[in-house]
Length: 451
Image (cartoon, rainbow, N blue to C red; front, side, top):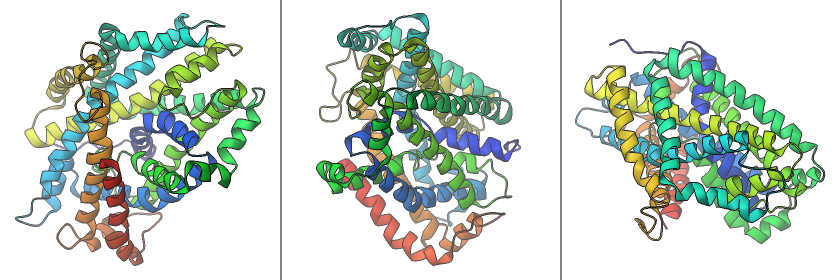
């Protein structure tokens, strides 16, 4: 079966960035920045993104492009005879399924809130308790959550069933263009709110005193974690798009472009949220409730808040759904490569499986609310813990060791693949950094996450 490929370089960059741009950018980034003193956190985040995110991204893309296959078969093609690196490929597949078991539910929350603002569930002057009760009501209803999750899963696999170019690439281009337009409009609107300047200063003006209050060590480790997780590295979610790439451009150049787009969206999300929070006297470090409780409270007290709320959650929908369809493509490609299925069969079987596998997360807030799997964590938090704290960092470490050690693919072969084409090249002088420093940094993230 002939391998599909992207119709354009822009398609590759937008789809890859769409996979990276998700809830981690537009939900987690602003509240983590808020909790860690704002601008100093942002500065460390950018440094670690360059030092850690870009190199590991080139490694995943290199394995994909050199092999032209998804994770399991990609490792098989590049590993030495008798070696077993491809076993990690199956963990990548498992990680993608596990990620979608809760990500589809959260993506459904975004769609739900878009329709709630659009249809007038939120009205001007609602009090704080009433706004908070809307989210409580959503979590308490397995039927309502189940419908939005179902819609997300079915729509996602339907798009992917049309193929890489006609489905994923075509739809992602439209969504990403709409997302970038929406984010600019929303940011400009936040800028002109009364008192917005204070929010912008908190976000972008470095204040060492605030960072010290949060603890410099905490700020640095939070920035390291965020820069690493924002790109969804370690479970083959990016590797698959390497397998569809041409050899025209170097991987470092493409990785930087993906990171720039990903970071632009994360930074702009903060420029929407912080000025709005400061304008209405709301704390910007409210944690995960920032999106579904704090911000709706801001919108209902804002002139034209119903429209601005609808636009914000439409933006959030595009951000989360771009990740959903990108990971679904990985699942389909894995089944096509490993089992020889055609795309339609892979789409139908995976759609049914993901629907069933997502039900525990839906029920975990109501029917199974007393169920705690890992420590005191509910279903969603347990699934997220396994993906974010174990599979992503451990998987990234495996990709790194595979690419830079003599027991794996090897540093010279990796460098040759990464530097094929036109554009930014990696220096061979990075060898010792990649072999000795980067593994330690990833190990720190892994150990810290598990503890």
